Length: 286
Image (cartoon, rainbow, N blue to C red; front, side, top):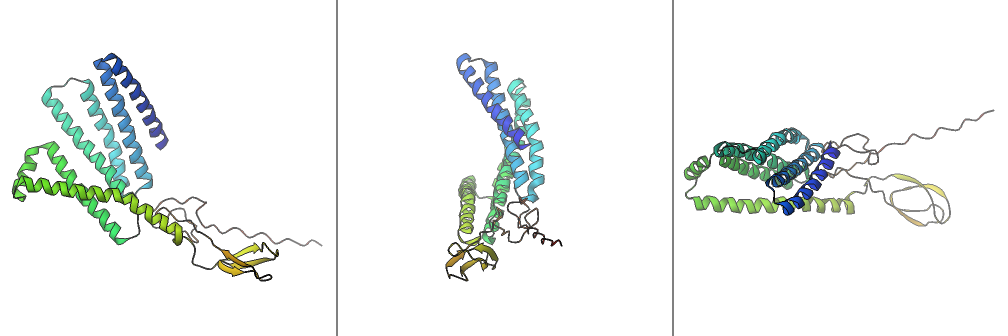
């Protein structure tokens, strides 16, 4: 499904570019509508692709939200398509635009929530930050949905809860700046933690015997990991085994399951600890 959405998105953007060139040359209203349709189709496929990626690789508890938003994207696209091609009455067109705008806000909110929760860092403060961003985004979603439905409702709530409209607006702007800064810092924090784990946290602390041949004297022997020495020529040998980690940072030492027990991501065979079958003892035939 992801590949289908990706190919459809690329084709739609290509068609949009073609109609854009025709619109510049012809200035025809029907061509302009075709440009809007192709761009709307490309944006819809982009959203569906992102929702599919978040459904498959994001937080398992939010799969239902991603699937719901995928189904919601289709009627939103059809509503905007109708507004482009059909000359509705002004009041009816305004109602359709409000419904489509409310659905679009919910879809983009789902993308934002999926983005916040698909980044995983094993730290309590990071989980608290993610939950705070979720709460702030939910507040903004409710405000936007109320504005789409009826702005008078928001005005009534603001007058009841806040001393002035200016105070309310300043608080929203400050909250938006803080949440935007924190949202942009999430992937940076995740990348720093991942590089740190790769640098010094992925080596196995457990001692494992490695069967090897000394590069100087050729003695075949078993040596422990980390710092050791050849048993014959005393050549100092340092053996380091970097055990692969899941994307969430879970160490996969002696892990042979199919999904990460921490985040639920599927683990490919190349990352799982699979004990090889010992070779059969050669039989002595008389």
